Amino acid sequence: MKIAFIVSQFPTISETFIVQQITGLLEMGHSVQIVSFRDSHPTPIQKEVQEYNLIAKTVYVCVPDNKMQLRFRGFICLLECLLRNPRATLNLLSYFRKIKCFRYLDLFLARFFLRNSIDIIHAHFGPNGLQSLCTKWMGIHSRHITSFHGYDVSVYIQQNGPRVYEQLFSFGDRFTYNSQATKDKLVSLGCPLHKMIKLPMGINLKAIPFKERTLLPGEKIRLLSVGRLVEMKGREYAIKAIAQIKGKYNIHYDIVGDGPLRDDLTKMVTDLGLDDIIQFRGWTDSETLEMLYSQAHLFIHPSITSSDGNQEGQGVVLIEAQAYGIPVIATRHGAFPDSLLDGQSGFLVPEKDVEALADKIEFLIKNPQLWPQLGRTGRRFVEEQFDAAILNKKLEEIYTELL
Image (cartoon, rainbow, N blue to C red; front, side):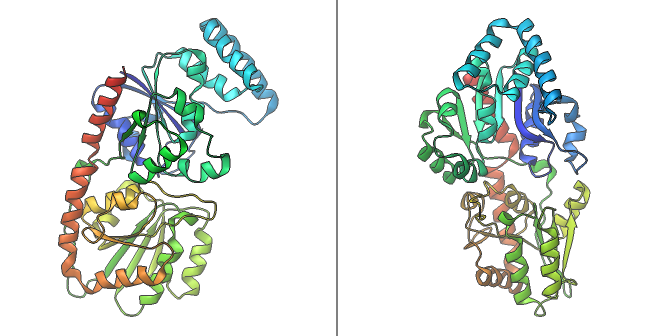
């Protein structure tokens, strides 16, 4: 099969789950191309991006800021599209007349699809699914799948209204969701049940070594968080929870990731007298991240609903931490109840509840004898529900059924 993945930005370190799907399909012998609306610029990337040479399989469909350059590129693109397939191009122009808007990005996407014969168009996140509907207006017969994750059914709906996906739901062929919470939101927005399929994002278990967590006499207890430093990740609540128990235990807290709140969070750590306990690691390479996962005793991920209404989706880092065998403390947020066995592989606490978060951290610190069983349960749960090899095979079956 020839498959085109439609993404906002590629590569991006926070969307390893998309890389896992792409590499899994390549391993199964399919042809995959990636269409990205933005370049990631020089940022840390997954090692699989290099191993599978994914940049060479990526086409960047970007709209230039300069108006003269935009019009010139648009004119050249329109001529090429007309020469390649006049009927499809005229269909697209007819759609532009209908909506009374000339959309350059649609035109640039159209050129890609006229240059390449594609069986399956797989868009990640609802807005990208909407954008790739240009193939429907053109009359191209590729099958169209959109995967929803979290932000696309929360803050995007608040910004654009509950009817924003009407055309996508009408013309799209299949829609995958990662959890019951995401499914409920899609149903409330009008997504047809017969087009919906549950397909969580998976992880490559072969690349994640399991290790039971134990505490040696005199050993420092290591806590870990991984993710962007943005409001939704709730790092400030983890820092405040650590402040409540500082001095009681020999602990160290590594925070991996970067983002707009780094300076504010660094100041908070200093103001609370935690500089000798908390270390900001920024984005690390894969080897360093694997080392930090291997060393960690507990994983903390206290995400919240941000002030703009944004919510996290599946929380893939929760799944990764459980695969490594680390007990997890997270919040009852978004799809997290589907991604963690509360009371069995870790604990869920209410959003923004510093007291509850500190209590669970302290409980696990006081009871290291519970760590091995929590870790074994978490690993088994991930093997049963989130093995990328199994989920990618299911994705292949969805594609085959559509074709």
